[in-house]
Length: 224
Image 1 (cartoon, rainbow, N blue to C red):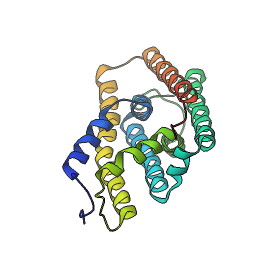
Image 2 (cartoon, rainbow, N blue to C red):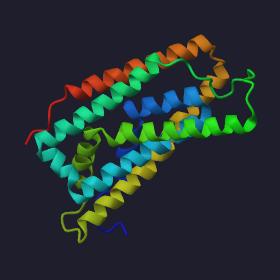
Image 3 (cartoon, rainbow, N blue to C red):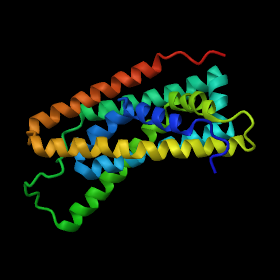
Image 4 (cartoon, rainbow, N blue to C red):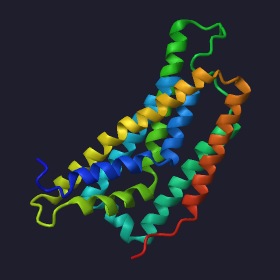
């Protein structure tokens, strides 16, 4: 099954270290855990993981190579991704603070309405996580640069091996992403963060998303 993979143990270890490193994905998961409790953190982690699958498949079939080789393709995807990060960041800065998971104040609405609202909110959390990852061209370039190093030159089915490495990478990333979301929710509940503090945390996350968006917008295309 792993006959085409070179140094599987090293690949797993490197992947774990890379996934621990904070970035836009981790920031989104943590902010979702703070705002939406453990459900928000878990759903955000699943959305990020689903977005990562897009890059894995695209790189395996050659779309990632197109982005790496074409300055125009990279620039288009870069601006779309940057615009989306700015959109999410501005939304966090400008929107009124939503009730946090665990708030016990009565809202006057029925249980069915509350459940429906939570379902819509979690769907939005998932989709935002998905697009936060899927629209970042640097993730596609990462897979193109990182995964081939662990494919044996004589591998019989290089595309299948590439996909298998991507699946392993994602499986290893999921517990870390879930851990970030659950830890953020747990710390929020334990610390008893007040409403004003929650609002400032959301604004801080929004500002960081804007920073990541601007940094992506000014990034140079890959050297050809």
